[in-house]
Amino acid sequence: MDLLQDLEWRGIIYQQSDEEGLNELLNKEKISLYCGTDPSADSLHIGHLVPFLTLRRFQQHGHRPIVLVGGATGLIGDPSGKSEERKLLTVETVQQNAEGIKNQLEAIFEFEGENGAIMVNNYDWTHSMDVITFLRDIGKHIGINYMLAKDTIANRLETGISFTEFSYTILQAMDFLHLYEQHNCRMQIGGSDQWGNITSGLELIRKIHPDESKAFALTIPLITKADGTKFGKTAGGAVWLDPERTTPYEFYQFWINTADADVVKYLKLFTFLSHEEIEQLEESVQAEPHLRKAQKALAEEMTRLIHGEEALQQAIKISEALFSGDVRSLTAAEIKQGFKDVPSYNVNGEFDGGLVDLLVAAKISPSKRQAREDIANGAISINGDKVTDTNYVLQESDRMEAQFTIIRRGKKKYTLIKY
Image 1 (cartoon, rainbow, N blue to C red):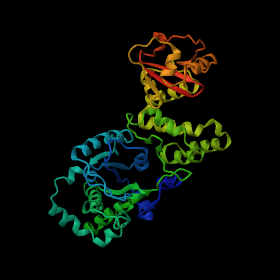
Image 2 (image 1 turned 120 degrees about the vertical axis):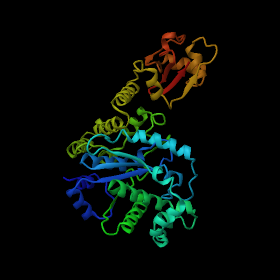
Image 3 (image 1 turned 90 degrees about the vertical axis):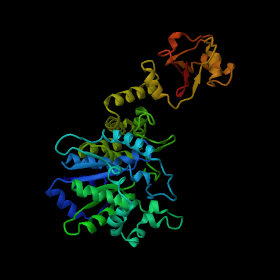
Image 4 (image 1 turned 90 degrees about the horizontal axis):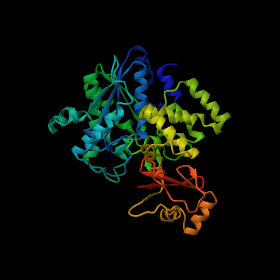
């Protein structure tokens, strides 16, 4: 199976500008192609991943990926999918965001070797261009009627669109032209919402290089869950690649909690597992769903790719400790990850260590009477160990790394005591 057939099998291809021409080109030579993102935040989230992972698939087949961070376009704001104007970011914020995103993209691609990836920032060739040059050399080739026909612009005409965002598609087209001329870049990959911007690049290349130009566009479908809801969102918001925003444990948990109806689709879109491996996991979903082999494979592949093997093993360790209740083996750093969103209580000032008083103060039990009942009934555990003595006084040994005590009421209600 060739590359395009593999992409079709995985459900990655949504639109192509010239399927026959692209297939012929890929069978004939190794090409350079690019995918870009604007640094509107200091981290990517998992909704950004599939186009870049698709670019990585091309690299695995011998093609050279160009990874673009939009330091210039990020200052303008893409109107795609937006009903109103974006808030403009400062140059300093955009450049800072760009650095954070570059570091994350470096985990996905190989930058060494014959087809090593190239990282570029469109601020480098855009910021020094004067307005006269932009209007004469670029703007002259893009017709107003052509731009008005773009969905991203047409959808905003009633609610309003500034000349700044109206011009965004030209700036992205200029990126494609620059990479075509400087790196012989023959194709751009993006999400389905980028089709209008990408084809503007094709138009600009065709106008400026009418005789020899042959460039291509490929877009990827919008990813949704089987129930129709948006992919990549949790109760806490987006799932970020930055471990400070979304810890590796939370990242791992997001994938392992994938519904059976979605997991095979995600294995195809996000992982580099072979067809045979994915088909075996699909059979497991049908025959033995309780084992959740597909979800575990998905969570392990994605966490390893984005955060590395060490972070993956740490996420697995935290997951197993929370499932079993055996939390004493966790380090302080692992406790911070695993208990990031559970209720917590800070012990300040004088505290005699009485468990009953602590349960009430931390709102684990509503009253002292209930606290004594909970302890006597075996419903209270300290650091995984059941306590049934209503007169129990916490010891120094109950403070894990002198920072935390983990109290559990019942099977699942955890509270983190901080010192």
